[in-house]
Image 1 (tube, rainbow, N blue to C red):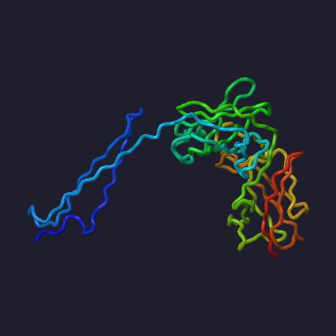
Image 2 (spheres, rainbow, N blue to C red):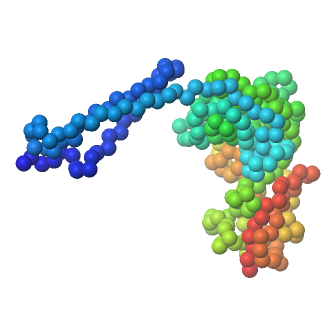
Image 3 (tube, rainbow, N blue to C red):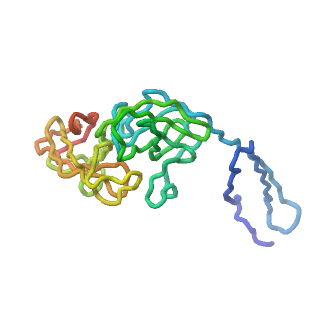
Length: 297
């Protein structure tokens, strides 16, 4: 008897297919497979056929309403600042769901569009594109340009089917917000790079690394639309409190190799008590939302 050419139980075949550049209507794939016993005879073999129809995802005009534009770090509404991440919620924003990938960058330039979805600002009567980091049918995350002027600004989402209604946003020089992990606890790490958790809390007197966005200008200034190539310190350090007590800021600046991500090294007060303590940043008159950091002696 001849040996089996395919292992018993079947086999998997994979192929790539490039769809038409324009809507050609539903596309049907047909497949036929021969389940052979390998005895080199016509008897005992079975032919299986199947088909699969794909319906094209056709864009519809996007829709966004006031109140659905929030800070991406906290998902809270409020003022936003240059070089900060913002989230838009709506409907028909895109037909795919994905974050940006390495292939979306060209010579370090941030993508202004993902899968045909872009975000357009209008200020001083002129349009300007932002940098899009995530798209889906109901959500778009975008980064405001680092040199954005603080003035009356509106936002629109654009896809191949049209543009959403212009929605006003409030911009200011800085609007500090801290990234959170579970809706309450701030995203932060120990000096060795390990993230803080309830089982690996911060210790009184320890210097921790906190991550945020919208913390304002750096020196040197960021190049608009480019990944940060080198460290750049904040022009103005934030005031930080942990558990209501002042916490010393050792340094703060942009994270190299990132976009719109700030790193702040903060020393936990040596007399901090055990528990989930509120952590708040303040820059001038702008304060971050209260987040929590777990401290344990």
